[in-house]
Length: 217
Image 1 (cartoon, rainbow, N blue to C red):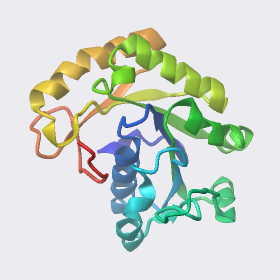
Image 2 (cartoon, one colour):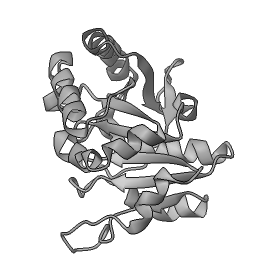
Image 3 (cartoon, rainbow, N blue to C red):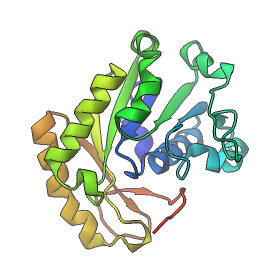
């Protein structure tokens, strides 16, 4: 289960656009709350309106997960401002998952309070998907990883291989992504902590997740 990866009170999920960050964030929150932890999710994806944790707010709230989202999330107002309660994540004892927007653009939001994350303690995971054009090669994925670190002033601790093409994903595609994730690991010096797969795909060592985000393809 994804919750076994949690080593700090604050977990940051970041990566390339469309890598599946939000799906990982929502699945992680559900795993954690089902294991008895008190969890908040910060929807920091103020860049891409298509995939966001706020889309799952009803389900998450029903299970006791607090969702902190931009005040205009899920409306037709094209403006995003985080509510004041966002800053409570640095003072509470609750676990917190921060779902960050794609690439360095999304990481800019983190940079504003990077010192607070460092003081509070955090773990940041890089979500890798080799089936996205800009991260098809480990080298390109590494460039995005470095840009996110540079912009956010925060460092990644490990890689989650979430390579998929949505509903069309097969066991073969997931297995073929593993060597690429391992190559990225060698380049950046970070461990591959998990390879994910939908529950409908039978791969023994994969961390099984549910599809909790919109499908555009």
